[in-house]
Image (cartoon, rainbow, N blue to C red; front, side, top):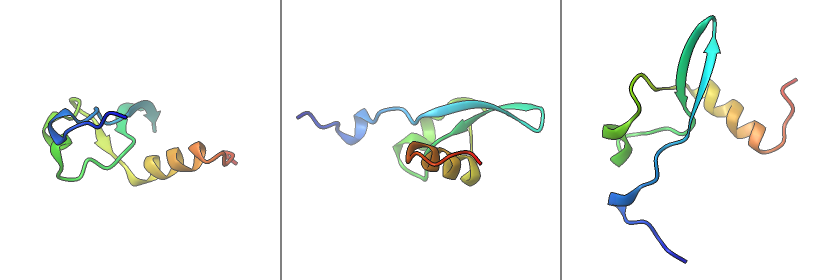
Length: 64
């Protein structure tokens, strides 16, 4: 099993959505203040509601 060093972090997952008619790239994980903070995609934002919906969907919860 290989491990990544802190300098070799994988990029944060993103999702392109149109919310309220505005196309936006959302981060699916909180970038915090870690090493990802300096290398975020241009215009990408973190929204707790999008993150919660993503987590629930990955656990098999229905959208309704």
